[in-house]
Image (tube, rainbow, N blue to C red; front, side, top):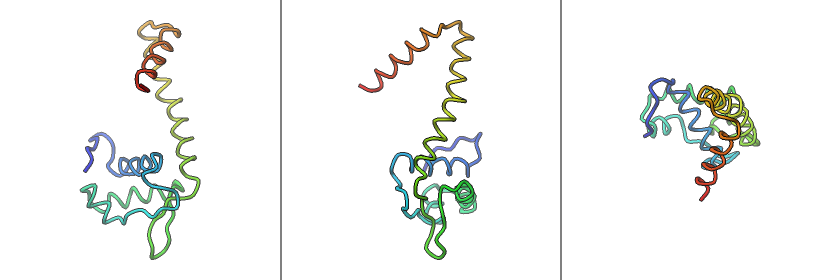
Length: 124
């Protein structure tokens, strides 16, 4: 069971969770995903909610269906997801960080220094 954010639709959170499992290597490319019923049980959600997440993943060309067998992670999708997440990180999170730093009157040098120090601490 996962703690869900009440401000984000559940099916999008399930979709993101599956994408995160692909990115982390917990689910490999060409690996079969659990059935909708199994995932619904694991997430403690209605199967329709999980089915909506699966539909989003199919539409995004992240997974594919083998009729009568199940859903599989598409080959090469990990790299695709990584590129999407990096682009999103740059355009959303970095932009917000820079705007907040400017609002606080922080110089570019100070912001870079803070990021570098935090990055080094996290890697120890």
